[in-house]
Amino acid sequence: MQQFNHWFGKNVMTAASSPNETEDQTGGLNQVFGTVYPELLKTKALKKTNRKLYYFLKWFLMLGIFFLIFVRPYIFYVLLNQNVLRDIFRSKSHTRCILQLGIFCVR
Image (cartoon, rainbow, N blue to C red; front, side, top):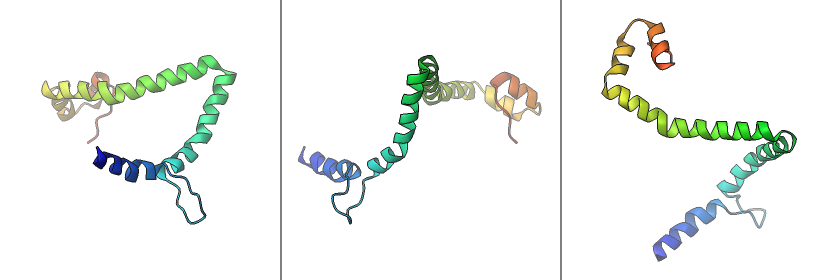
């Protein structure tokens, strides 16, 4: 447990540090938050002015990220195992690729 505490203090707490003196460095998490915070303010303003659009965009973004992380790799894994993708990418018909997968074939 002591090794974990030393690792946590050295890596995570250093990344979240804020400068106390002029020569101290700002941690990476504080720098990231400094660039993300203006966008957070914009989303709060959107939520205040148009709640329906805010929640639509929020769920659209979350479901899109979920799809890209979990669903899309699984679909391509299944298609590769069934040799469907190999046949499509070997074909000379680009329209066939677009219609079957919704993507463009790149050669």
